[in-house]
Amino acid sequence: MVKTIQTKKAPAAIGAYSQAVEKGNLLFISGQLPINPETNEMSESIVEQAEQSLRNIQAILSASDMTLEHVVKNTIFVTSLEQAAAVNEVYAKFFRETQPARAMVGVKELPKNASIEIESIAMR
Image (cartoon, rainbow, N blue to C red; front, side, top):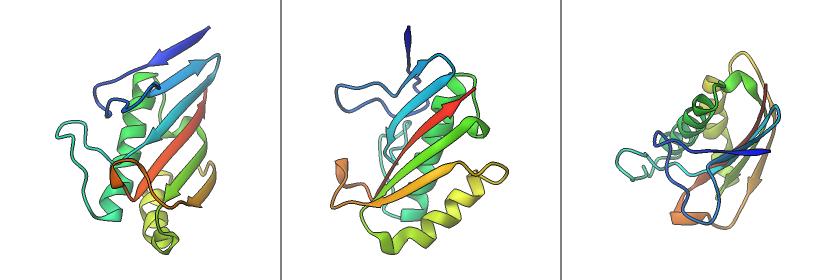
């Protein structure tokens, strides 16, 4: 059975998808844009955007009684790979103890003109 995860502490899905779904011991978190769920706004700074996307992931993990330590894989989409160093600095602050598998992909554009989107897979 697949369980849908929803929390108001992360932005609502902007399409026909769930914030996350849980199946067995796996949690699949949809790509998180850097939208602040309280203001529905996005910063222009890539550092602040990366932080917000990761805070959104933390909120979804928490709604499923998990933490960042449960994350086994992240995929980061950025509109400029020139921003990789700044993203890596933010990322390292969130994933200090554990270092999940990861990919960073340069893309032409993202929804709502975001500079970053991050999706995650977590496991109990």
